[in-house]
Image 1 (tube, protein in one colour):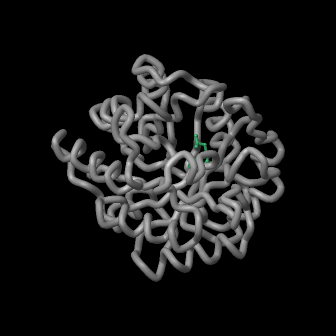
Image 2 (cartoon, helix red, strand yellow):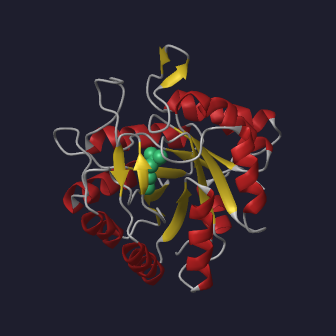
Length: 270
Ligand code: KMH
Ligand code: ZN
């Protein structure tokens, strides 16, 4: 099975002050996505920013970003409904009205660094049902073992399309630490036919991405997850990180999935 690579050019927290190559305007984000596509990514995980670089769920900005990406390349668009810690859930959930092919679904509330990431149970059920209705494929972001159980309960209620697609997020303060042991525990507990990738935040990004690939997972790369290519060396955008993930996958004997292959593997809507 070919490996699906996701480019994650902009996250919820860092700004250009942390890495001047961080894309924040719609045009910058679309250009970073296109470069990631050319380096092997078939999915673009998208966070929106306003004119002051703050995370936003503004639908007009979302539309501009999606249009600009679609003018440049056929990559699959996965909108983040995580958006940013300062944006209320009620605004975040509206982003799926833009009908991206995919969007994230964060199943539980948690501490997130010094902040709080609010995903209230009734809101999560409502969002899952809406995504199912619109044919927006959820990527389930699990930061702890209980988050997986919460997703399986949603599945048992008929609210998630198969195959389930997980991001195992390691290294957020408030979630699981970024260790190989935690990753293995989670992988062992996934349903057999689940599709999954590692999201390793910060320093352990490279090692855990490599271990995830070796264990049969997909991979995600970009400035959302690490601002550095190696210790003390800022990544000059997401492309070098995506290119490195592609090299790792190929060295491990995998092909890199095309957009069509990822589309088919995930059972996305036409
Ligand atoms: N940066 C991730 C750890 C999402 O996109 O839905 C958290 C996140 C979730 O941004
Ligand atoms: Zn994200």
